[in-house]
Each structure stands twice: as C-alpha cells, then as structure tokens.
Length: 100
Image 1 (cartoon, one colour):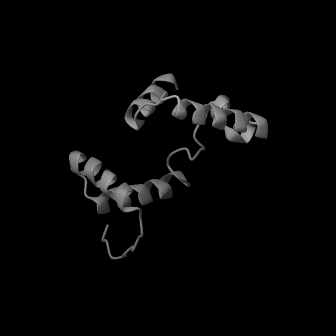
Image 2 (cartoon, rainbow, N blue to C red):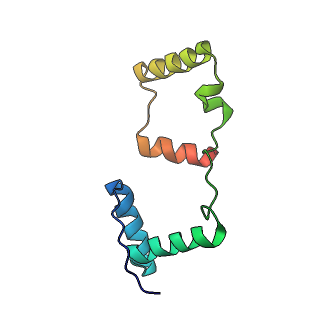
C-alpha cells in the first residue's frame, strides 16, 4: 500500500527516546511501528490493547483513605525522615515492585 499521508505528532521526548530504543532493538523504524498501530486499530475496531487504570493496592490509594488516614501516613513519613529511616529512590522502587 502506498504511503502518502503525513502525521505530525507532539510526544513526550523521554517516552519517544524509550520507544525508539526498544524499536531499534527490534529493527523496526518508528514510522513502521506507528503504521502497525494504526492498522491494528483498523483491524480490531479499537485500541489494540486494554486501556485501564493502574492497579494500586488499597493501602496506597489515597482515593480510598479518609483525611485522617492520609494525615497519619504523611506524619509517619515525616517522622521517618527526621529519624533517618530513609532509603534512596532506586531501593524504594525495587522494594515496591517486589511487593506488588
């Protein structure tokens, strides 16, 4: 099929760089990946993957907490900082991913 239409997109530069790195490893140019995505939308009649909110454990979901619970968690966080009970972000995220 001849390609004659042009798309101009504005995207987050970091997201673009990450996607380009993956696509490069797969040997797929960005334009081909976008074309594949648009073809899948056409073939499936919608977005070709589930679009859902991330699953957040209830104990971390502020939408499910009362004001008192939120304030208690914030106070504990501040108390931990003052007491030196902290870790770097890399360690914290690794620990979080391991639990959930």
